[in-house]
Length: 291
Length: 289
Image 1 (cartoon, one colour):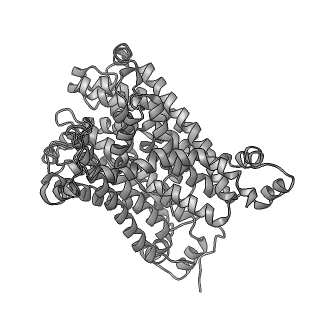
Image 2: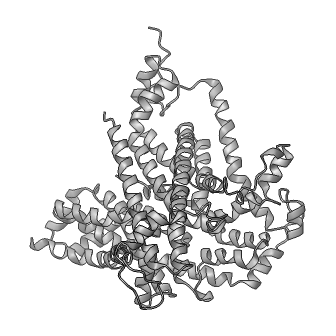
Image 3: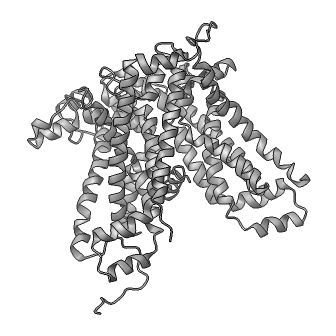
């Protein structure tokens, strides 16, 4: 045992930082969520579960926000995974041209989401936006929309931006997964005369399950975190159509000074994220194949 | 059996290749390339147009490569200061993340297996918690400690939030280092500190680079904590400054976009030279389980 004790010196600085400035605040959200604190005055009263009750039974905006989060998540998880998988399969070989495509598709990932937001505000701008101008030029006027102003489509317009920014990143995870599949299996499939779809269905897909698990879990988490993008593009509007949980709790705390209430949202938010992630791991793990 | 002549050990081919799909393959790829490039170049072109030119000709090339917007930007805004602030916060944070993170990772691989595993799970659990969940209690706590509106507060919160991912990347790598090498050093009587600095750190170069790039991109682009913490203009980081341009310049797109370009160019340049490391780093960050 003696030879281990100097290791505590290696652990302590980082561990203390993590516990004091990350774990402790995360736990203290629980305590805050049981109060009616406004964040400014020292006065705070213990209100029990009143915030949770209010949120879950009597706050239509919270319900809407939750719905938006689900819409956003489903759209992003589906399209981002689909497109990144298609591109990954196309670009799996390490040829020069493919490496170039990969680097290009990956580029938006490194641009700050605030910059991405501005770029797409311009694309979506109703009067000079490139998208509408473009559609006019193509004589597709009937497709013209107020992309961020229409409350039925705004959330999807932003979800498209999220996909644009991260398809390349997710694609790279899939490429790593594809490259780890033994080539001999494809040889066998070819000799057996399997169609491309059969090859995909019975060789690629099952063996890609570990990467798919990572991708889906990561994308889900990412979709819940889409804070910067929405803050800058619509700030939750029009009429809460793009408000998602992270933005909701920000607004509750810093615009409405309901710190207690916002903390309760944060706790629920945490529970939702954790349960979705666990569920996905269970489903995808069940499909895992070993060879 | 009439098999086509086998081509031994060719690279992976999920779809059996024929001549025509090879050509068709480029159609969606080029299309998507355009979807990536077009918005970026439109924004870039817009920075050389004045507002009226942008309204009459939003899609075309600018009439001249006029730098007026950039001049105006640097006159009106303390871009140099924002830039410097971003550098201070990012580099200091990344340094401490790597320092603390690599020490913890070293301890994890040297500890008895179970203790190491528990410590590893406890720290990497932090990767599961979205920072947005933590914003209110963090804000409250940092206010109490008088760490708001200071770069120090920003650095501390960045280190604490990114430490889990760094430990995750580094431990994974350090576990693959040859055990015999470390044990030999131990037998020679080298201290932990010596083994860590002289042996493990130098051998972990690639993983350190990966973790550094991942944390660098996240810290450089972070908006949430500067937004919560920083109130004084002279302490603002680039993303926060950009966000506030929106309120300041409203639809003066050329001005806002000049800011976007100035803030993004350094990252894009570094990316073109180090793309391999960027891609590895940003992917490692999402790899779990």
